[in-house]
Length: 75
Image 1 (spheres, rainbow, N blue to C red):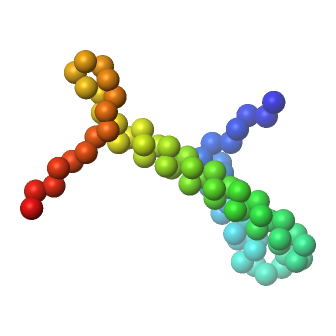
Image 2 (image 1 turned 180 degrees about the vertical axis):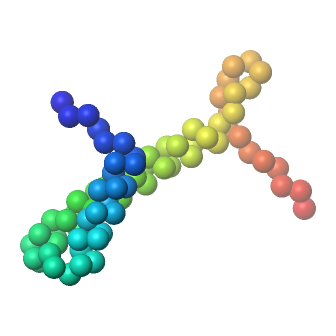
């Protein structure tokens, strides 16, 4: 089974695809395939960022429980 790519690897691949497509030298059929792949990579990256945000927004309480971390804003 292939190892899943890291967030950074996916971003790098996405950037490479964008550069190719921006060049305007990719045949239409290949451009469609590359665009589809880029959208899948973008979705994976977005999901990973949301997951990371959820993890970061939790705090460990004194009794070892994870709770959502919220900062109260003063008016």
